[in-house]
Length: 123
Image (spheres, helix red, strand yellow):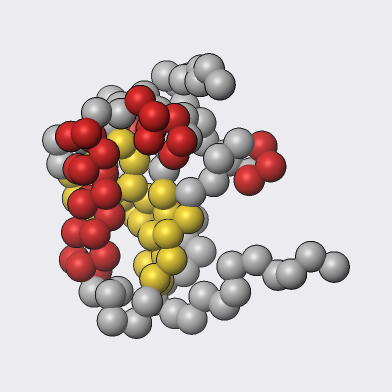
């Protein structure tokens, strides 16, 4: 699949400094920041600084350094926020069926309360 990156998406604008954010952690290849509409007491987004649309796009085309940095950033954020003991959830939506709202790879780190089941069984 060919991935078409829109450099006018909100996360691209955040990376360029055009839109402010509440940064939690910034590394060479990644940025973690608080979600503006949190769905749990802890709701942090982690995005790569590269132009990747979905996780599979990132996994196929990112450099080893970008991948290692991104995964380690998720781990560092969880440690910084103290959610390892009680549990947390990592979500990445990809494409229309998953209701991906921003066409830039991002994962949601959610925690701070019981989150319930991720999906209800199909009826």
